[in-house]
Amino acid sequence: MIDNLSSQFSNFWRLPLRWRLMKPYYTHHTLSWIFILTLTASVVVLTVGLALDLAQVVRISTLTFVVSLNALFMTRQHLYYIRRTYLTYDAEHYLVLDTTKYHYFDWSLFNIVQIVILFIEFLQLLSFPIRDLLDALQLSRNQSLGDGDESDTASFIIGIITMFANLSSKFYIIQLWFLVSVIACVALAMSIIHVYNSWRPHQPIALYWVKYLLPLANLFYLPILVMLIGSAACLSKLDTEDYKDSASGLLRCNDPSIVKPLYLSLSIVAYTAGYIILTSFVTSFDRIPIEGEIHYKSQGVAFLKNMSMLLSIDFLLVANSYRHIRSILSLVIVLFMVCFNISTQPCFVDQINYWRTFGFCCILWVALIVTMLTNETGTLDSISVGGIASALAVGAVILLVLFMAVRRVRYNSDKASALANASLVNAASNTAN
Image 1 (cartoon, rainbow, N blue to C red):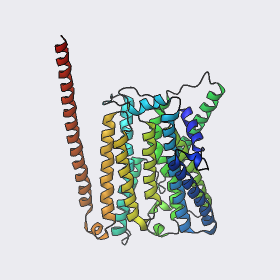
Image 2: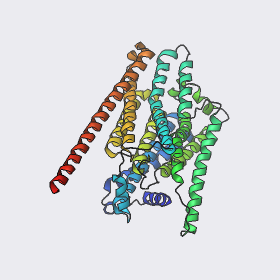
Image 3: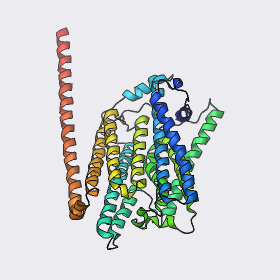
Image 4: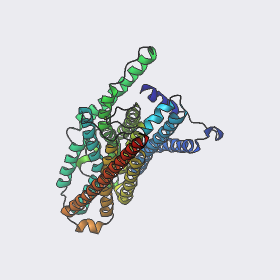
């Protein structure tokens, strides 16, 4: 794991300036330089915007910085996985990892925890379009009456279930320092182990126990980063139209005692550090899995985590005045996640990949309904909450029936193929006798 981390960071800075030195990875290096330039430009513009107190400029530059950082890290990680799989001395090990597949898993405690975490991650991703729908309902129906209690209550319940920190909650400070301490402990542990193993390479610290920390890191990945980027999103909304339409969640970051430019700068720095540390940690543990154990390919984890973060950035930083663009972007992101999960099979267990695809399809259905409703104000005003819930539930049930039917057909087909192979083997043995 530590070797993978070191290799990732060394690969990150291997950026040739000359075109001929980029061969054969022209696309990766060119995109990397583009994202580095946009990242640098966004920092300069953000600094100017904070100095001159230009709210819209601050918001756009914050969005550009976060998206550029995410895209740059995704590009460099993808190049690292290509080089690692085909060009390293232990490439055969990684080729085996890419082709290993199991059909079933054991109901061990470790696997049960993994399934629970998968379900919570599903709820976390589902909460983004649901919250967007709740906000749209509040704006269209309750804003003129000054009644947003139902929407606030629903958002509070969603925050508890998904473990997303709410800026208006009295528990926010506890959540903040708890999650920051998690980041600090992970960084400290990684540094100590790396230094010790470099000091005594013949007696390294065994890292078999890291696999038990990975589920915890996966569970807190989105809550930690959403909390950090949520503070920046909150501050970037001040003095804009979104602030006038917002609920009480923005009151904390509008405290007069807060030095807002300093708070926003520190929030972005904290998000950058947390994003790099957590993403590197959850994508650096590679080993040949044990049969029956739920384990993931690091390349698949890297892509899905980055796309999940893009989805949260889309809903947190894109302005409400561009709600239609925000909802369409969410559709595209979730569609990419569905296609990636189907094509690459990021989990070594086939059943997990299958039902995870079902979860992504449910999120895609909810995002589609939200896109249709938020882009048609008349429809949103005329349809009841029960009607919206019924549409979401009916779509999920249809998807469930479809996936169960396909799974049954696949099971019968595999069973028939196994019987046919067995009969051919028996016939061959009888002929030989």
